[in-house]
Figure 1 (cartoon, rainbow, N blue to C red):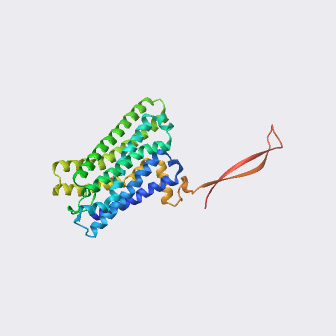
Figure 2: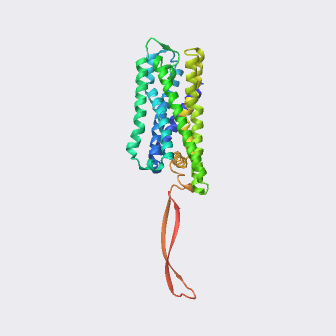
Length: 319
């Protein structure tokens, strides 16, 4: 299990780096939605690095730490996980606003809009992480250091409870967005272009919801149930260890979703992975148009001895 989760964590590091780099180098991805996606990818990247570190600690037989030591080692990862949770809600709110209020959405200042979404996320991450630190104890021992064992006492209840609320709000935001897209799709039956666009957006939202519900939402629900039914038992600890797979899938799967559902990201990924060899259709790095102007003499029964300029375009693969 440790080796498998380590490999998945390494893939998460690579995948989220790929998303960030794609956003940086692709001008078409320089918009508010992709800034939020980039922020989430940054948090996912840090989480993946944190998960790699935890697996290395386990392989090095780092067992039975004090809770305080576990939390201190995990602080940056726990903070990134809280950013990750908050960004899920921020992205859900962004998609809902873009669909429900498209005119106002485009009129808002990018800086103010991004700040309005990111500041509450940052505040939430700071509060939860700081509260977890104040509740950590050197007198408590944890067999394996990982996020559920880092939070204890009231901080654990607050962490789980706040994530339950966030999951409900995220699912509500995406469900509402889906409903509005379906209505727009029904109203666009006479316009094939609009209908295709709305259906594509609906499919993407459905994909996001399925992955989110099957990974992070299920993880939070399981943590809530173990906390209520069997807190601190061996059963609860065993369930929490297995939940690490879902957490890793949630952290690592974004690159696959974007490569599958988003053409701009897919093209950027190909350009990065092939060092630009197949950045453009047909396997060209880029195409250069060379204009050759020649004077061609033509004769015609109605127009003789006339000359005209003709322009010939030749596509030359760059070297």
